[in-house]
Length: 631
View: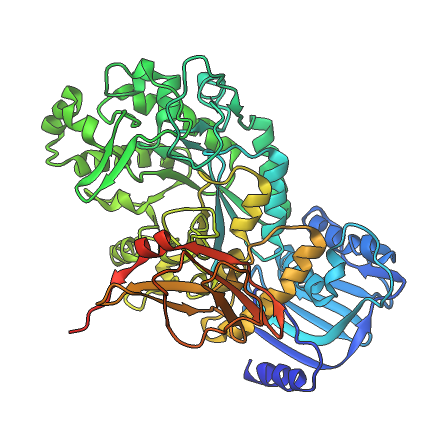
């Protein structure tokens, strides 16, 4: 591996283009020279159903190149050869591959078709960025560097969570998301299918879940701040996936060697289910509830979560367990993946505290706290999940009150819950807010769609799923989560996902020792070019500076600025005009003139603007200010 890195660095120093593969392979050795795809591209491979998507990837070369692609079972001198190893190679496992590009052509070898599929994704990244164009591109040769690559994943669980409940996305849009994930070697899509805003999966034995629970009132703006809908406003915004839709999505993912993890979020976040079937609630009057349209009803305080209406399933109601058995019977048949996610997060218990039936349950079962009530619920749900032949998985709140015997924990409130679960001998998937929440802002709040927290690209790249204090075998992988309260359409979905999903893919695939921020960002910029060609939206926030405002002892404001990437110059103005590279360059913390009404900043590189113009009014700066300690 070290030799491969040295060879690549030596080649880079000659001035030739650096190979830009994401996620970074385990080992890559680059040599002088190139291989140019011939006009007639012959692909030699065994033709079977599992090879379908690898072959489709290579057939797709014909669109931008205009070259003819022929796939044969065997050929004397193919341009590209895909080979399954005769003997299992333990180094690369089921998803790894060897990729060789010489002056004679390309050979990709793997133990399993999954490895060949991932190898073809790497091959595409070796070609010029125009290879992802949806139309023919002329004017240059389709060449790739001569390389020898050995590659395999660090973790078996490499996922993204896509919340389709807060805002509904069509089957075609989900499949497009899967396509883009697979290019970066993700192998799991976690679909958050139910929540207060909509139930998105058809359950034939419980039709009201979708006829009633899948629709709310369309609101546009900042979700969570909307007024309650008026009675006459139409409830026609939303949708759901039929069972045939789900089967097609599952197969689409399977063709790309990706599993689909379904999430049915209970006992909290269940308002859509309660609206459809009010008898599932502990609270009288639930039959008057409506599916949430973005109005505020949850309060998160230091004393716990308090809900204005009861959005929970009642743990003391036997009908709830009959309901969940029906739901999970149908869900288990639709999703072949061995896990079902049952939520468990952010369960407001203030209505349980007032419920006579919950009080009776506590007395009968010897439960002392509401957390133990939820643990009782989770353990019963685990048995239902396991009766369907699946493993039970939940957010880290399921630790509170006692963990179900065989539960898998998805740790989102930092790493603490995952560490606790692993020390108890449970498998863990790490998805902490600190590194992996894609709904967070990516840059300065003055320019980003406002959310309550920020996660920059460089921070996402620091994600390390395995804490030093636990058995690494119990950390089965990780994922990033995209909640869609503030995501209304596909273009914004893309903006929030990329480039941070580049970082997460490398966090989960590439050996820890090989990760390097500066090298990674150099490759990210190459992939920005690919996304431009493919017309996929991404966030340029990494080029924008981070600003910290402090209040000095004399009440003067001081502004500090820094950039995530090297080589950027920050130019600024306090005089309301528009700064460019002829304006002052930031070199040290600035004292804000007291008469100033706003600060404007922009970043340049090599004399050209790369960041966006950011304007921060003085009132906003004062709100951000924190008094420095001059002890």
